[in-house]
Image (cartoon, rainbow, N blue to C red; front, side, top):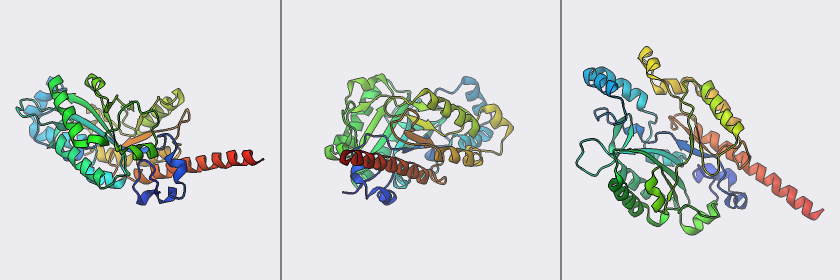
Length: 328
């Protein structure tokens, strides 16, 4: 049986194929690669600002539209690969920020990051479901959050659509044993986190997954925050270590020629070194999901695959020790 370490494709997991049992039977502790603001590659530069933006910023945007919009677009765009491309690269966790546009009489939902996407949520999730149909051994985590402009009726309608799109692929929360083998046996391919109280009434939806967001502009600031959280001990269940950098509006105003892309790339070597030092697993200071920006051009996939190799070696060593002690 072929083994796929979570966060890898078949081709990328060849190194683990000789050790299927050790990975298939372990709890969901391998490193998962995630995409922060996964759908920001398709933002509509002409769409309204999201409802949560301040009235002063709305006024500024209205008065100086031609100046503000290119800047907003440069700093709100965190990815440059489509969701199908991200899936094919090995991304398995998707940060999906969902909202209903103001003054929109339709029931369409869109993705957001300061502004709205030009593609709808349902057409995107249908593409994910289609991809999963052709990759029956792959498991993804979809983290739906924000939900600006959505009332209870809108939530219930959206959840109903989610159940239709993914059907029996949805893994119910509260599963006692969560391993790749158990998921494959049940036909589950989607763990769907839904950050709303509405989710409590639906067994197919998982609660909010903690996202460790540093809210820092430098790699050193992000790393200090993530290391501080590691020292405090990992949360129960899934959690995300966010590598994404955040620039405040003062910095953006003083650096009009920069973008989130240039900021991320200029800090990459420091972030890369931190990732290489991490160890996945269930230990007190282990990492679980690593999410970053521009996961296409930056080699995050290969780094996380290398981390999972550490876990395979660790499990292999433990099994050898147990076997040796049994025969001694």
